[in-house]
Length: 560
Image 1 (cartoon, rainbow, N blue to C red):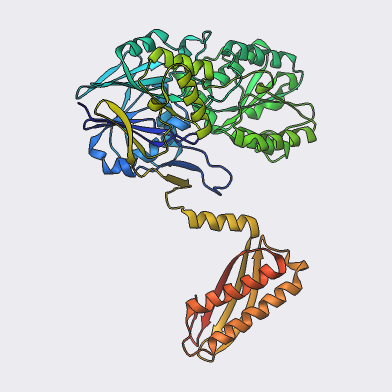
Image 2 (tube, rainbow, N blue to C red; image 1 turned 45 degrees about the vertical axis):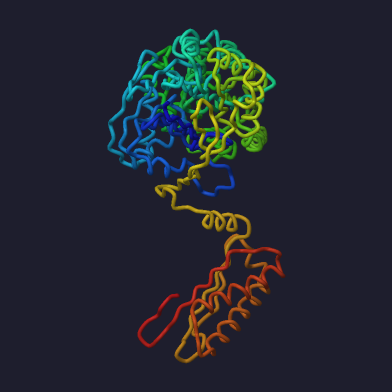
């Protein structure tokens, strides 16, 4: 009997950061390697990636990385993974091209070229474990599901998917191939849960294209479209609608130009008219009713760019009276407040806002009927909902039970939980390390809870700096105290408070100088304690207090 384990290192009970490990005997298969963009409480953090500790402990067993599609939640952590591991990476043509582009954009200078392009006909044999792929429908071409065939049955990972009977060839699901995998026997299904709670089913992308075209044809002003850069399907719909309504596309942002350029080069994005895209520097040469500005970026970035446009601070184009801002993406729940703020700013400068979700349910993730169809096609013995918050995974578990999978065969896992198959049954069996690694600029994992706490305090109550120069030999203050604040109080209106704190620092320093057992650490802590207590009593705020103590002597000044 084969030893089989399923371990999510990211992607469960959260949105993004997908990374699932399937172990079959002595081979370890990494399914996706994605990142997650941080919520607001992670001040200054650029991205969150999985903790690779378990993979480092088992690096000799890694057979490869298998990617489902070219979005950041599936490929975003790959550059950081490839800094640590030299293993082959498998993905479709567009997925591999975007993975290389993403690695280049991080500026990490990774020298890696062990990429392998696969398609729905590819089968790879790893010591009697066979990895196959099947086409799925998502908002980007070349999206694939992964099937790992073991001696105990096949383990299927859907990646992000939905079903759409009107999907074009590059986006079409191969239902017969999925059904064939189901006939061969599926031991466990790991399936996308992002929209399992939805009470509204997705409309076809044909209907979405009609909605975009109608919006363009009815607009007699400039149109500013906000869309996620890697949503190639939506960009294609914008291109097609612009041509049919006699408008030109002006692309805002360098990164999306690279993504669009890559998709065009591989013919995964079709340009209906060679003259469609015009450099944004030439925007003033066209009348407003001819202009479509395409503003894209990572999830959340287009909305923030709209806020800049509405406040006149965008580097390329700003919203003006009469503009129609078309939000052609489905914002996450976490973005709803920011979207509302952006709408308010746009209306204040005379623009109007329309969201594609006003009339349609247009998600790239399967809604309940699609989720149950996938289960019915594959007929798994065990079911593992992935890719979603706990509530959506729980809703997906309920959907699975409705089509015949008993709850005892359904596992709602947390990151790091180990699901093992032995003695003819699947069961939870312990945990491995599976935390978050925070990316801040070029720093990888060097930001921890203490730094985040300090950033939060700085954002809430600011910083209070007390600078003093002492003459320890003569036991006196040479100069100061000088008080500097940022983000705490307006100094010109708080003269009395500043004078009081200056006196407190002076008293604490003089007391410490008279102490025969003078200690620099004790001096700084005494200043923090005394100032912290006084400032809280006076302001009910707790700023970060930073004592800067310098020492002078006959020949030099030393800073402590």
